[in-house]
Structure formats: structure tokens, C-alpha cells
Length: 391
Ligand SMILES: *Cc1c(COP(=O)(O)O)cnc(C)c1O
Image (cartoon, rainbow, N blue to C red; front, top):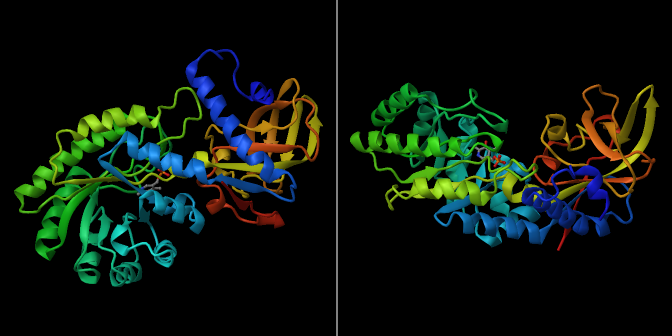
């Protein structure tokens, strides 16, 4: 399809990475096109096959690491059901996410509660429903868990570098080495079963060292736990596995190579899991929007889509390197792309699209299956994308 040449840097078309990305976009367009034929508002087209393939590829790359899908990335029940069929467990942050899983028949013991700060009501509720594993990153949370979920198994969320993540979280969560010591002392006093370690490198992380460092730190903490009479059972590698949106982004196999190597010296008695969200669902989904209007203002050209910051593209506004692909072909031009609302924040950056773009042209945004629908609102009366599952 010629229009990819419009959007991708053609300079190094011999580069294997560029070709892989172009092929990935081509595949996503091919499953989105048909669903967009009778366009009547924004869509998120989601390929069941791609979702299954992503789960299989993750498991194949890291045989020892069980993926627990981070429900927040896209909580649609049809997606959760497909992932369950592929054998993933789940990671939650709220009672509502737990309810969605229980309604699907997911056993509570496959659900890991990784939000480091949970309300007392949420802990009580999850415990009553049979959830056993909980994250904590401070003594105050251990006190809540000890009082409200005495059977809980707790994994310590440690701080780890978020350098190289598109969506860093460092600072908001994570125990420091000193904090870990305080948690161990507190768990001894309250008889909390402290038996795991987790970290989260931030989302769309392209710096593999962050996982390696996290695992090394976890190994040290396992030794501290053993010294104090605890029995380590779980290493949770968190999420952050990136989509390959630019030629610089590592593949899951690149990341697996380093992680698997680091896991070789981990005792077999320690179960290893991860919490991929974006990786599993991101490249299975493609947003489809329509041009509402174009405007030429002196030297700049503006393109207004019926989908923007509020409609599911909050991450594009934050600079994640999604590619916009038009159905129209033509010489490329740098457009300032904006969403439909009257809010100044609703601007999506500059993108190459054909110079002759017209109202009602369709614009496809591949690899947007994660953090799109779940972050969308109908602010200003513009419809949020409708999910369409395709085989
Ligand atoms: C958001 C989150 C994830 C998922 O992150 P992705 O970047 O989508 O893989 C996993 N674990 C925790 C604790 C999270 O907060």
C-alpha cells in the first residue's frame, strides 16, 4: 500500500526494522479496513488473532515467565476472555476490575492485586472474594493488609529506574532499600507473609537494563527475606514491555534474552510472572477516525480529526510514536493534527499525511489497542470509539 511510504521514513527502507514496522502497520490496516467500510464514528478495531499471537509470542520468548495481563490497558470482557483462553493470568488495580474478571469465571487465585495503595474496603472485598496476592510498598499498607486480609501473600514493590520509559512512574511508587528494611521488620511484627518482590519499569520502556537491574535487586531482597525467616515464592517483573513503534524499540525477544539470562540463577522454587498490558493488546488494535476539516493558516496546515486527546489518543498527545496513516495517497506534508473538541490541550502533534487530505477521509492509527478506549471520554459531545472485534 503506497500510503505507508508517505508516513514512514523511507530513507532507510533497507533497514530491517523499518520493514518490520511497515509490515506490522500493513497487517493492522488490512484487518481494520473492512470494519471501517460503513464509517459512522470512531472505531477501535481489534484483531482476535493478533491478540492471541501477542500472548503466544510473549510466552514463547520467556517460557519461565507467566504473563498476567494488566487489565487497565483495555478491560473489555471479550479481550479478557481471549487472553484467559491463551492461558494468561491477570493483574488488577481496583474492585471493579476484579468484578469483571470474576464475572468471566477467572479464579481469584489467578488475580494479582498490584496497585501498591488500596483502600481498606478494596482489600476487604478482594480478600473475601479469594484474592491472595497483594503488592505493598510501605509499612502503612502492610498494616492495612495484616488487619483486613490476614491470609494475604505480599510482594514488595521496589523502586526501580524508569529511565527510557515513555510513561514513567518512578517517585509515585516503590520502596527504597531503607523502606524494604522497614517493611521486613513490620511484616515480622505483624506476621504478614512477605514472600515476593515486584517492580514496574514504567510503560513503553525501551531500556532493557531497567528489568535487569530490577531482577538483581530482587535477588538481594530474597536473601534478606530468607535471613529473616521468610520463604520467597514470587518474582513479579511488572509491565512496560514496549510496542515496536520506531526502529530503536527493542523486540520482546531482545528483552527476553536479557531477562532469561538473569533468571538462570534464580532458584526454581521462585515462581516468575510479569504484568504486560500494552504489549499484549496494543498492536492488536487500530483506531479509525475521520477528518472533520482542514484549515490553512498562513504557513501552517491544520487537520481536525473526530478523535483526539479525549477520544482515546491521550498517549499521542504525550508523544508516544504512533503513526497516522491515511487512505488517500499523495505527496506528504507536515500537518498539525488536532482532535475535535474546543480544548487547547486537544492537539496531537505534527504528522506527515498527504497534502491533499479532505474532510471525511479516514485516518488509521495502528497499535492503539492499549490505553485508548479506557482513557476516552465523550467530552464536548464527541463519541468515544466503538470497539469492533474482528477475527
Ligand atoms: C500499568 C501497570 C502495568 C502494565 O503496564 P504496561 O506498560 O501496559 O505493560 C503492569 N503493572 C503495574 C503495576 C502497572 O501499574
